[in-house]
Image 1 (cartoon, one colour):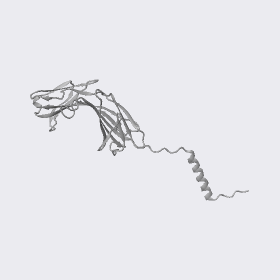
Image 2: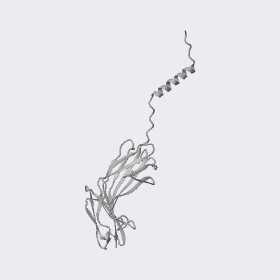
Image 3: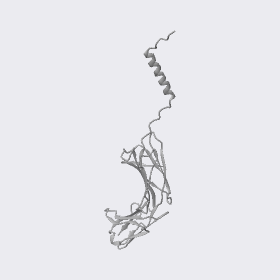
Image 4: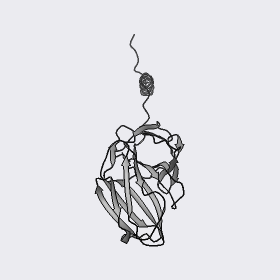
Length: 239
């Protein structure tokens, strides 16, 4: 007995069923990966012999952390809705980046710092960065200077020496008083003639070179980086 030709609509139905069955046998398609973040982390281990005035917050140690977070590239939009922490403390959103001043217990100057970035629909970014060294002013101490007195500026590192930039300015007017770059140390002198009377002088010091490392991995856009720059400051009054 001859089989009659199947109608076209039946053939289409059979083809659809075969296609559906084949699709069920294929593994599910992976969700598209989120665009990577451009991340710039800036870490400043900071020691203040006095922070705001000549005798406030003496020997205050802190780490100032700034995290720039952008979608896709350095030119991408800023990401304001992530949760960014350092040493377990949440950073605040300020204009276009995250930042926090992490006050430390007396005598504690950590040799590393952990940073975490959590955002919706992506894995948490976890990094631990070494702090190569702390830079500390040893002179001058917070004080009231007599007229005609030179000001000695001295400093020390915890692990190794590197050239430093030494700066001083009139804290009330913002006028620069002294600048010496690439000083091998361990001290320089600000002449008394350079110190204006009846004012507050801010002296600060930072390395002439910085620690930089580029960050790699699927979570990071090209150019992501961490920069670590220790510095130290002191305020003195002049009569």
